[in-house]
Every structure is written in C-alpha cells, then in structure tokens.
Image (cartoon, rainbow over all chains, first blue to last red; front, side):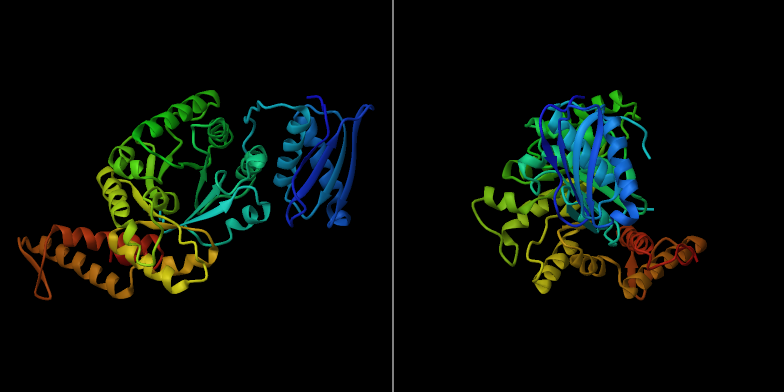
Amino acid sequence: MKIKNAALAGTMESSDIMITLEPSKEKGLVIELDSTVEKQFGRKIRRVIGDTLLEVGVDSARVVAVDKGALDCVIRARVKTAAYRAGGEECFHWGGDIK
Amino acid sequence: MKQLRRTMLYVPGNNPGMIKDAGIYNADCVMFDLEDSVPVAEKDAVRFLVNEALRTLDLTGKEYLVRVNALDSPLGIADLEAIVSTRKVVVRLPKTESAQDILQCEREIKRIEREYGIEPGSTRMMAAVESAAGVLNAKEIAAASPRLIGIAIGAEDYVTDLKTTRSASGVELMFGRSMILLAARAAGIDAIDTVYSDVNNEEGFREEVRLIRQLGFDGKSIINPRQISAVHEIFTPSLKEIDKALAVIEAIKEANRKGSGVIALNGKMIDKPVVMRAQRTIDLAVASKVLEKERENA
C-alpha cells in the first residue's frame, strides 16, 4: 500500500497512542517516537509499528508516534487505521492467524 | 452450566483504556460498542481497535459481545466483517424492527463465515429492540434465528418513539418489557433489560433491578462497573431461597424413592412448576458460585 497523504489515528489519552503517517521520498520507514515508557519499551514499540506497517504493505513512510502507554494491540490498531487512512484504502481483509 | 447474563457491561469501542480494563470487573458479559458511543469519523478506527483487542486479550471467563451499527448503512456490514472474523464474540444488532432485520444480519454473517472459513452457524447473535414496531414484532424477532441467544430492550429510543420520557416507576416501559420477556421465553432465549443512566442514583437503580428480576428478566445492560455488584446481589438467590429449593428437590427425590404420587413439604403441595422453579434457583446459585455443585447433588 502506498502512503498518498498524511493521516492521523489515535488520541493522547492514557493507554492510547497517536500515530501520524506521512509520505516519504526515501525508501524505508523513519519512526520518531515520544513515549512515557520510552526507556523500558521504546525498542519494542518501534518494532511493533514497523512490523505492522510491513504487514499492511507499507515500506516507505515517515511515522510520528506519541505513546501514552498503549498495549501492542492498540499500537497495531492505530498504525493500521493511520495506514488505511493515508493510503485511501477502504477494503480490508480481516483474516490472519488468531492469537 | 448456564451462561449467566445478569450484567452486560457497555464499553465504548474507541477507548483503549476502558477496553484494557473491561475484563477486570466481574460483569458476566462485556459488550464493546461500535454504534452510538463512537463518532462517525472514528468508525473505521474502532473496527481496527476492537478487532485487534479481541484477537489479543484473554477473553476467558466471560461472554463478549459487540454492538455493531445497524445494517441499513454500509457501516453495519463493515462492522460485521471486522468482528465475525475474530470468531470470538456474539453480534448484538441494534434497532431491530422485524424478523427481516435478523435474517438480513444472518445472511451477512453466513457469507462472512464462508469467506473466512469459520464453522457455519457458530456465530451467535443478540437482538436489541428500540422502537414501537420492534416491540410489536418481538415474538417474530426472538424466533427468527437459532443463532439468537437473547433479546434486549433499549429504552431511550423506545420511549422517544412512544412520545414520552423515562420515569422513576418505569410505567411507560411495562408493556415493552413484558413483550420482550414473553417473546424471549416463547423462543427459549434470554431477556436483557435496558440501561439505567443515572449512575449516582443507586437506590433508583436497585429498585429498577428488583422490578426487572420480578418480571423474569435474566439480566440488565449496565454502563458503569459500579452497577455490577447491586445487580449480582439482587439476581443471585439468597441463602433462604437456596435452602428452600434444596428442600423441594430433596422432597421430590424422597417421594420418588417411596413411589408416592402427591408430594408435600411443610404442609404445601409440591407440583411440577414448584420443582422447576427450585431447579432454576439451584442452577442460578451454582452458576453464580454461591452453591457448590457437590452440595446440589448431596
């Protein structure tokens, strides 16, 4: 999926994360993270963001994430929402492995 | 064991903090809402959030439902896709007006089950009736699909449709509640009462819960975890009721052993409805964990 325009998902409420996605001219993902738990979980949060974007076919974008202690499932949901908004996609297949 | 539905806790589907904590409280059922509590601009986000949460969170020990948007808009169909594919929840359909609404929802669920390789017929449904037409069609709605586990009344829209408002006594809801209950009993499914919005009026809430228990409802939709304990307290059989029920069952066993036809306990005749009520009390007590299974069979 191609990031066509900037899009945002999530809030600044506790347990949430706000994800802003922007198109990038360069190949690859650039992730800027501001998190209340950066020290303990920064690497993990970046990995979840990166993996989720690759999962929905985004391999080039600039990501700004402001985390307020979101669970992994919330990070995944907000990244997917932002990606689909930024890509202008409306169809989504909900399949995949159930954890 | 019977699935208890004494309390059905509403959780706005777009609030990660509330979703995370929903399982902590001891409500019998948790219902994630994709409908009225979610702004139109966030309808896409809430699908991703509830879908991911259902796939990840430990959902054991409770029944989970998701209230989808009505199917007369594209929102409802998209909600079903996101939810049914998780294989984890009961679909609660809002604003049900007729059996046709249930059948339409069932058709969509069937299609999604086929597309995602889900066992046909495994997704269960619940109907919420929120209008005069819905109440008048309650019997057909409750019997429309074997997937239905219950039918609920949604009072706010219903009283607006009746051109009245909710009162403390709930007199305006008597007919609607009775219709829902009769429809549920005739179809052999559960009847769930509407929410009580004034969370600070505990006495008013308790009065309403006592009323709906007396009417025969199985439980109540609630909007705040603070409301859980009062409902469970009122819906759970008291020790006196349990002892009486156990005595009835013991008397019937004794009579069967002796081969006697007419049975009496403390001078009162025990017939089939009395035994059925006693058994129901015991089942509810066991499910509510106030009576051990062993003692029931002692």
